[in-house]
Image (cartoon, rainbow, N blue to C red; front, side, top):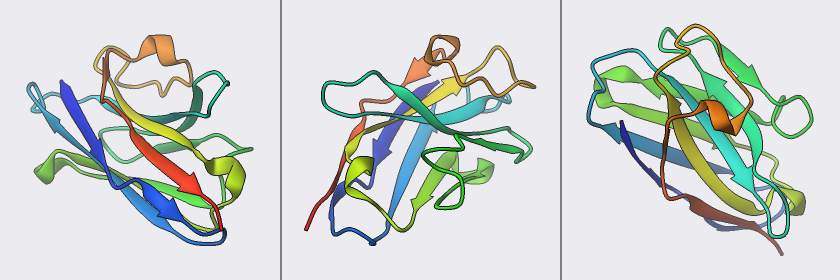
Length: 125
């Protein structure tokens, strides 16, 4: 699976953004899609994941209550709606696909097989 993320940009604190991740390749087979982020000088961290059937998992500290992950399998696209953005949300956001563990949503980046190039989100006034 090849992935292309988009939708990043500059937003003020409290604002919203919706990231998109379009998949190509073996998209006819189920896979788990995840969003990760990496802030300057920090390690890549898990944000959210979604199963083929729509089950979701969120990082409780960074995403739960503010971010919503969704997918449209007919469009081979996964979304991350981000609301109430904070300066600490500033990071490069990556989408990823796990084609192996289709029934387990891993939070470990090493478990994901394919990665997009990332899209930059900057939250600043």
